[in-house]
Length: 214
Image 1 (cartoon, rainbow, N blue to C red):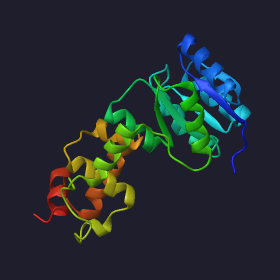
Image 2: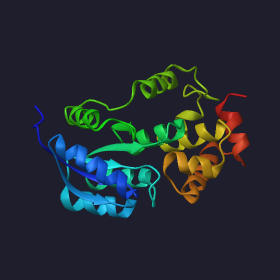
Image 3: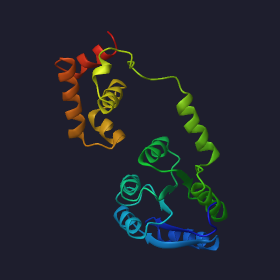
């Protein structure tokens, strides 16, 4: 049973929004232990105070999704909830991959926001119904995979190498794969080089053909 009171930090570069959210949270029984204006401050406040919830703006300076990644690693017991104006699918899915358990819009009524955060602390996901439908559509969509794990060649790859090659097979660039998997472009190239060596081929197109069974 989640206690009535809970602790949170708010991170957003809009001072008026921070103040409004703070008032709403505190009126609903939340103790706001810190407010940040950028990603680095959000990470530092979370590590210092270990709040129950970190409420992060996606597009604040320093990148809220990067902050979510770092917080997940440094303070795994803190629930990460994005508070944003963005309805963009890429922002939504990148947030979930970064460790967010909630994705709420800034237009959310303060009373609803408090209830949503309590739900998160009780083990529920927090997301507007329209965005839940997008997540479900993504999982229901026909597979876009270019090759299957049943391929004998695929069995030679590590899980990360598989992810890299799968995304390259979908037509993503090295930089796009790096962004999607939260890696550096150099690391992606290292994985590709390892795949080429394991499959005894000279280039990535040959590797993709081999993995697809062509």
